[in-house]
Image (cartoon, rainbow over all chains, first blue to last red; front, side):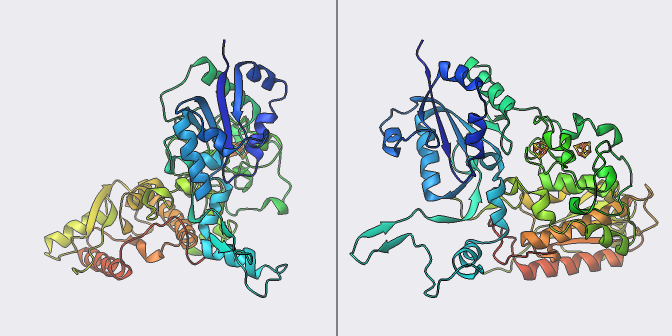
Length: 324
Length: 145
Ligand code: SF4
Ligand code: SF4
Ligand code: FES
């Protein structure tokens, strides 16, 4: 039997998603039996021209990780879409923008100024910043990909067949998803390859989760020793479980760290709004002073509630004026 | 060019603020046609996802109106609304959304005049701000709330 052709590509990502595939350990051998990786820049030395030379639909499945910030990433996403029968948005950056999309809390100009001009360790008296088009002293033209004003999730630029969130998706999730793809046992297109319930439902601290007004202040993890038996919210420590999709096996909670929400929103819901809703019901405070005091314990609400899902937030792509 | 007419979605609680809108009507106190009322049982029933959905679908401003503190027919729904609202406000600041686009008001059933005043003031504020543009980035970064 001929092997299934697969590709893995990275856009704006940290490399962790590629690492999660390598982390399959010996399970990757079984996948290698069935799959021929024709393009995987992290592990091989392929050229874009190799993909360009393929027939349309020649690749059975492309796993694309990372969000889309540059024209090069968009080009590769579109190229792989054309050459592939199935495209999976792999990891939370491809699904919802991920950590790179926190950059949407500032602007391209803010990022360039900070990175190339104002950081304390930068010495750049001539104010040199990267340009899309430039000429060297010898007269050669140089081109760089353009850097977009905003960070897109993958399905803002191409059609995506399946979504596998996680920062990064763990070995079991990857093995299950690959198994389902290879066996052709797939849910309807556009689905998440994971259950649509909140993390709290399977968390083993759920029985101590508060249902009524209990939180008077939010404590930062650096200031307290968390009780490993109690729901974090019950201890006044922010945990994103109520607004986050289940499926990871809550490794963070098991390690006595609250969930930061990496699996993204449950269903198509806005993760931040959902968390805000949950907190409104379990936070104490009727006067302005009480409420302000409690909220001061959440110094960065947007970055906390949308840590991995800024591109799918209501601030995100639906009304982005400058969609590529 | 014609003056910008904002779309404003106003969630009103059944027991007080909807009554307020009704009494404005009864007293022939006109309020702006820009305000689209959505009647809910209690201001505490307004899920943040409803607010977000309104903005996502094209609202330029959103109002939530409920009973005065102490008068909520479900005891403390309006306190819940207030906590969510204050948290929203902090988040909107970071997201580059002017906080004048989102208002919480207490309007009792008999307060037809107040209903007219707050909806008119809201419409004028949002009109002055112009259409809500969601560009997917925040031009002026707000690093700390
Ligand atoms: S809030 Fe966190 S600790 Fe509490 S039940 Fe949910 S996931 Fe578990
Ligand atoms: S517990 Fe939360 S942060 Fe940790 S892996 Fe699961 S979803 Fe991600
Ligand atoms: S019933 Fe009016 S705010 Fe709760």
